[in-house]
Amino acid sequence: MPVEDKRDKGPASAVFREWIERVPPENILRVLICLRMLMRDPAYQVEFFNLGGVKVLSERLQLLTESYLENGEEHFTVDILKEMTNICQKLSADVKQREWLVACNSHRALLLLLSASDVVVLHCSLYALIGLAQSERPRALIGDLNCTEILLRILQDYDMLSKTNIREQVKVFDGIPICLSSASSLLHCDNHKLLWNVVWIIVQLAEDADSSNDIRLLGGIPLLLALLQDRKPGTDVLYFGPESSKASLSTEPADAVESCEETLPLRAAVCSALTELVVNDTNGQQIVQSNGIYLLGLFLFSMERNRQLFKRLFPPDLFEKFIDIGHYVRDLNAYKLLVDKISTLSEEDIAVIRNNILATNQNKAPTHSVGHYEVRKKNAGQSFLAMKEMSIHNPALGKTAKDRGKSVGEILNETTIMKEQLRHPNVVKYHKAFQEKDKLYVIMELVEGAPLGEHFNSLKEKGTRFSEERIWHIFIQIVLGLRYIHKEKHIVHRDLTPNNIMLGENDKLTSV
Image (cartoon, rainbow, N blue to C red; front, side, top):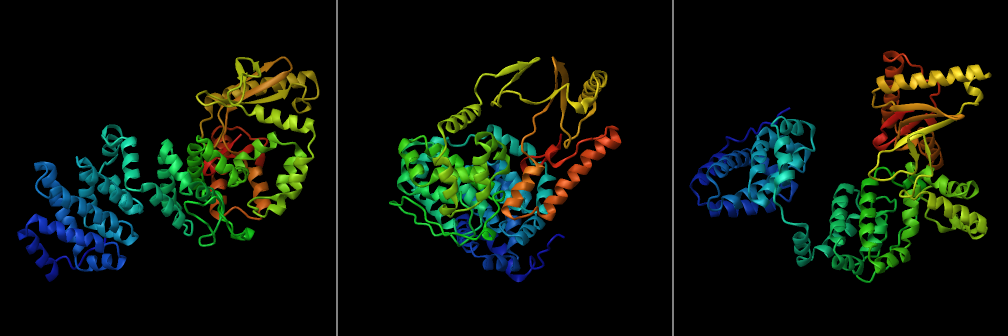
């Protein structure tokens, strides 16, 4: 429900309106600067609303915005707009205050200021709108004002400072130690979004060779590696400083570990930062010395989507050792049997692992061709499909040659029908089926992710379960896919198992 400022016509508000009409603009600017500093305290934000301040601020912001866009920049106009939009940005950090702002139509003026020529005014207005958009109703009101075209124009045409100039300015103002210090202090809280933004600043800085060295010298590498580890807020013990060479973290019980999926965006940002830093050989060596190989390997192995890759890399008995250890185990003693196993591998076993690693090379030439298709690993920039191969002598196709021939013909016809008719986000797309010699091939969409069965096994190993919300999300997608193929397309799915249900990013489900 809209929030009404019942004090906007009170005596204090009336006095302020009279004062603001008469006072020189430089005095208004001074007051707004003081007000912006007071707005750092949530208690003062509430008092500001109780005194009718939000209503007055919104009215003055609207009037000044219209004057600025119509008449151009006047004395102190831009400076006053900077302070006003900055105050709106601070107020939009609270859920209730977002309702105050949109009830007073502040979002209308902020949206108009996206056409401002001044960089700071534009940025403050944009960040204030981003803050407002964190709540559903304000977001809907902003969307009703047709802001999409304005935002796209900003992305396409706005002439911002180059990355290089920004990096230089950050270095001049000691931005690298400030960012690293901020990341270090945020280790003890659960504000992953803020930490994600700080890490991405470090990613951009690390692209410069000098900045990359500075990040290492200021202890950035052990700090970034610490962010890869599971932890609860306030439990980390981290030594961080110019001379730091390692991060020491306390051991936590399994039930205290955060979900890897919840912190995945942050960890992805950390990996991006390490990717930039490792270009420098000295940085790469420090990553190794800081136990980076172990931490990166642990992170990769903890993700369900990577389990199939690890199965292809390691022999079954060695992969079994990883499974026995489980996920998120920091006690090095738990890895003793694994290390012993690796130490006793024969030259033949090592050669197998080496070949398996070489097989993951995404740029290698195709191993062979089937029909008009080349069989190879995925490679960026190319279109890839999945191929299912079946022997036509498979007993499942029939007992006699006649029965098997009939089954193959039916599969070929059904695949053609499915290619032309099946269009559903939860059902795999089929492209073609064909027979070559004694093999039947079915070409279908390549689905990213891991089978639902793999997720079940991983959760069992972790001793956890799907949340109810996640179960409903997956179940509804299964039902929608089955309803589509059964009721609308009259096709019966004869092999619905957890291994034929793929879960991709954000639990996007595809039945194959």
